[in-house]
Figure (cartoon, rainbow, N blue to C red):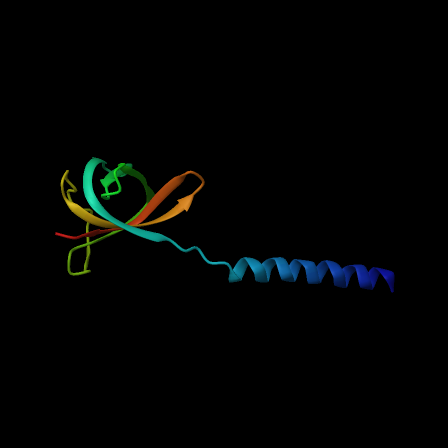
Length: 103
């Protein structure tokens, strides 16, 4: 009987841990600004108008969108180009997973 109760308690704890992991979602934020520095497949620095440049790192998979919202291949991003980035904070980094051209 005791073994059954311990087994049931362990199974319940495992079920709660799995269910909790499935419910949590990753949310992100968006920011718009002008590119002031760009390293392909690595990092992007934007002037968002907040006074301080903001550095973002690229996630492993990044989606690029044109100004109409259509998916495009990685564009030749250049300085002074306005973009909107979607990013997720991970530790002390802001990882970009989507870049949309604004102009």
